[in-house]
Amino acid sequence: MQFSQTHLLGIEPLSPAEITEVLDLAGQYVDLNRSEHKHADALAGLTQINMFFESSTRTQASFELAGKRLGADVLNMAMQASSVKKGETLIDTALTLNAMHPDLLVVRHPQSGAVDLLAQKVNCAVLNAGDGRHEHPTQALLDALTIRRARGRLHRLSIAICGDIAHSRVARSNILLLHKMENRIRLIGPPTLMPAGISDFGVEVFDDMAEGLKGVDVVMMLRLQKERMDGGFIPSEREYYFRYGLDAEKLAHARPDAIVMHPGPMNRGVEIDGEIADDINRSVIQDQVEMGVAVRMAAMDLLARGLRARRHATAGAMA
Ligand code: NCD
Image 1 (tube, rainbow, N blue to C red):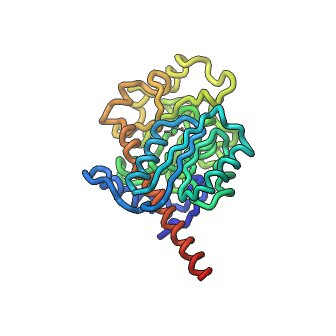
Image 2: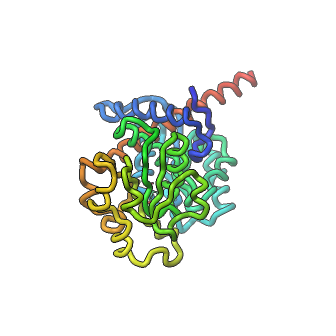
Image 3: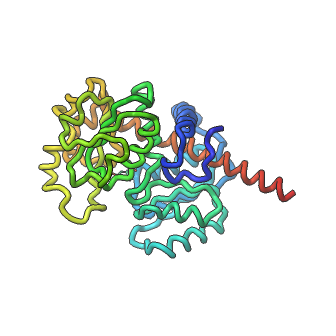
């Protein structure tokens, strides 16, 4: 086994071999999920608690389904964003939950770094389901699996990530992963939505879609993360769609077989034309959702194996 992480807090600490191991195992779970009997027992006897301090549709549902399909007891805590008081409150919540002996804790939080902090206070495996604009590792892994299946490989591809890069944890985790797997990454968006110092990440930056999309294999669109903007980053949504929204005309600059991706939730007519999003010959957006369940099953399975091995070793040392 290559995967030697205690937690899945981000893509940053993962090696290419660990990424490949998650994707290979997820591939097996895709087959299980397509079969009639969707149950395996990798997490039997374990307790999984989902704590979402920020709203989520796909991510929370797929973590819940992933845990249930692998036999875990799954608890969804309803954490309203309004009740988040940061710092001590988060740690107190973590300690309370820790006393219930969870084995897997899945956490989404509006503050970057909050999930790492929480992981230091508990003695179970923690999975980051998105922290502020920092990381969203399972999203990058499910995107990677989608690309690998659609394009037949996950290296030496030319991949464009377009739109609100500055506020996006999805972009950040994807850049880290795709860079580790030796792909060419192009970032396209208005200069106001590009993070400072981004070219240090080994990416090419464009502010023109026609130029940036030229010959790419993959077009990944991002939502304008308005909840993280405090002021005018774009003149208007209409103007934004005109310059950066993906429509047939702009997509024509990419390779004829380029795939179109979006992590959801989508704003049709803002960052993407509805017809492109629904075009089954180009869009793999629904595949991304399907891969999401399988990748989360694989990630929790691998973390649980490590958890069991460590507990076994501790029990052996104490005997
Ligand atoms: C993303 C997120 O929450 O970071 N959505 C998701 O997990 N599928 C992207 C977004 O909110 O735009």
